[in-house]
Image 1 (cartoon, rainbow, N blue to C red):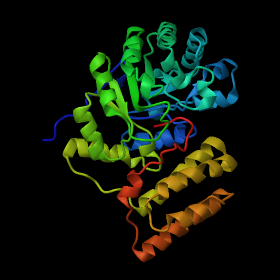
Image 2: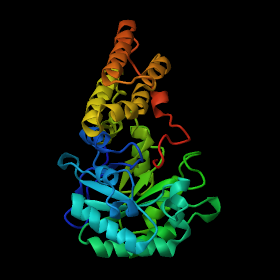
Image 3: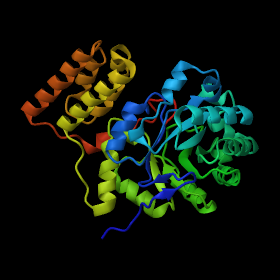
Image 4: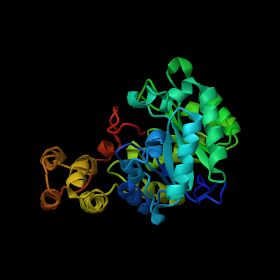
Length: 357
């Protein structure tokens, strides 16, 4: 029997994460259609794309839409970013009033200049005392709702302080930490430093999820086995590939590596994603946002570059459906329906989103 590498994580407020394989929040990606598809594939925890504390307090309709949580995606959290403890606490209370999240996640990892200029996101790693106070005030404001933190390992190579920050946020009441193994300076280049992630996991008594470069079930198993983490968060590895969750769970439970999803499975998932996006945003916005998702779904398939170029010009849903189905038909006629696993596993060094991992 394979060793048990994933065990349920129990947080306060009666929240249990049965399978701690989480979908890392990514700006412009982790809205409810994509979260639902990942949940259906076995993802154990989803978190919204990040929202500004101030935008929430201004009652922005767009922000309220972004924090929408559906019953069938729980347990689910809402991620907030900001740099003022009192404002973050008030925003967290507002989130609890509006959508009753299973947890509030505080963003200390986003490297985007538009966030760090305001001292939010990964900029908080340069101010550990402020990071700690934000967590303390949010915890007090929303108890018993659990508060968690998503962070990087440091601002740059000369200031890797993830262990210090993790200890501080634990002392302030955070109940779980997700660590992305890169500095802010790296953005999404280079390799995630899992030695630092492991050091954080050893330094605190609360659960730690490791994040960075999880693109294959075998990598997931190795990280769980060697980094002392309670679970994993998968970001870019899930783009166009929600099967990463079901394949990883199957591998952890049985030791059997399932094949990558084939062309038919990918096109059918893209079409379903399109339908969910239309229900969420309407046809005009859905088609335009689905262009990037369609490109991710087709990655690694023969002739994908030409298909992506055509799909990127699609204006209507029926046009996109026709292009996807036509691409599938050509592949099935040629017998080239299998995906290149190496292409699927490769992730761009520059994230296609504002904040993700």
